[in-house]
Image (cartoon, rainbow, N blue to C red; front, side, top):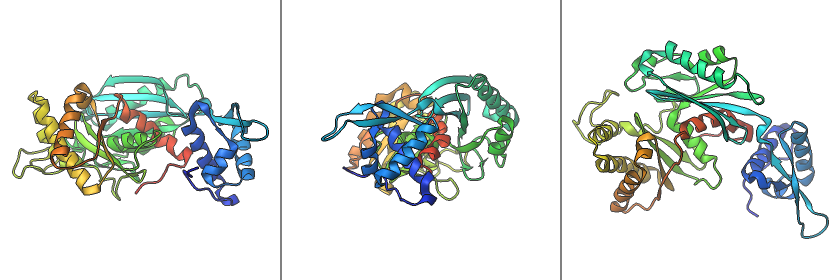
Length: 357
C-alpha cells in the first residue's frame, strides 16, 4: 500500500503524528479507516497508532464507524473523523461583496451569509461589516470555533497579516487587518490572498493534483499556485499575481500602475460582452503558467468564469492546445471556493497542512 505521509515514533512529535492520523481520517470520509491501515500509511507502529487514536477518541475528534472484514482473525474496527468536533469561519472579502461561512472540521459548509460591500469605503467600515457577519454566524455556534480565515485581493503580506497596495484600493496598504479583526472577534485570524485561499482548499480535496494553478476571474484576475501539494506564496506573498503580467507593451493603463496587464485586457473584453476574447486572453496567462512552472492542471474559477463556464474552459483549452501544451483544464465548481478555502486557512494546521513553498 502506498504511504501518503511518514510518521516518526518519538514523543516529541506526538502532535505531528496525531495530525497525520487525523488527516487520513479526514480523507477516508464516512467509510473510515482501520488502525492497521493507519499504521501502514503513516509508517507508525500499531502501538503508536492505538495510542494516538485512543487520545483522538477521548478528545471527541474520532469515533468508531463499524467493522470491516479481515483477511484473518476478528474484524477490524474502523474509525472516522467527527466533523462536528470543531468549526471554522471563512470570509471572502471581495471588492464589492462579502461572504462569510461556517464550516465543520471536515470543511463542509453549515451556514453562510452574504452582503454587498464596497472595498473603497475603507478598512474601518468594511471591517465593521466583516465583524457583524461573523458575529451573526457565531450567535449560536454548534460547537467550538477554531478561528477565522480572511481572504481578500492582494497584494498582501500573509505572515504579517497586512494588505499591500490592493489594485484600485491603495488606502488599504499597511492596515493591520488580521490583528484588528482578531481583537474585534476574540478569535485567531489568518489573512491570505483570495486566490491562495481557494488553491489551498482545492489542494486538500481528495485526489487533488500535486501541482496546479487555480486561475480566478471575478472582480479581478489572479492565480493561486500549488506545487508538490503545497501552496506557493513566495517570501512576500507575491506569487500568483497573474493579472499583472504585461501581455501588451504600451497597452491600456492598469490600476496596478502598469500598462497592458492581463487583468485590464481581460476585464475590458468581459465589459464589452466579448467572452470568447476574454477566454483567449485568460488562456494566454494560463499558458504562461504552464510553460513556466510545468504544472499538472489548470483549474478555472471566479464569478465571471462560472457565469459562462464552458466558454472559458473551451477558450483556455484552445489556447493551450494551439501551443502544444497538454495540461488539462478544469473548473473549480462552486461559487464559494474562496470562502471555503479561507476556512481551510484555519483548519489546515489541525491536519498538519501548514507547509508552503
